[in-house]
Each structure stands twice: as C-alpha cells, then as structure tokens.
Image (cartoon, rainbow, N blue to C red; front, side, top):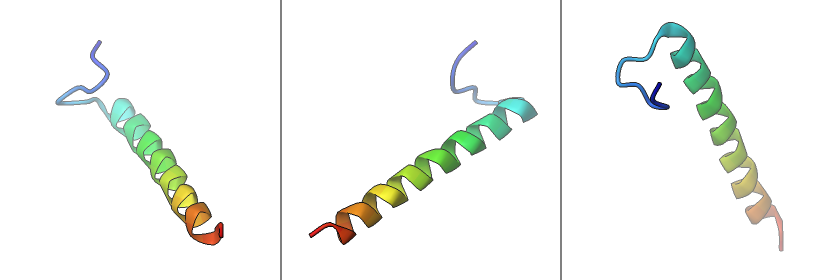
Length: 38
C-alpha cells in the first residue's frame, strides 16, 4: 500500500491530518525556540 494514496480512505486521511498537525507543531516549536534563543 503506498504511503501517500491519491484517494485515501477516511482513516488514512485522519491519520495524515494528525501527522500533519504534529509536524506543524514541531515546526512552530522550532521557530519559537530559534527566536527565543539569543
């Protein structure tokens, strides 16, 4: 089964949304840390 399906099922789409949210939170934390650090 391909990792990125052009027409994902509902469960895979939800999993992809959770993964994207985790990735976005990680990016935001990295940007904030780089701004806060001297």
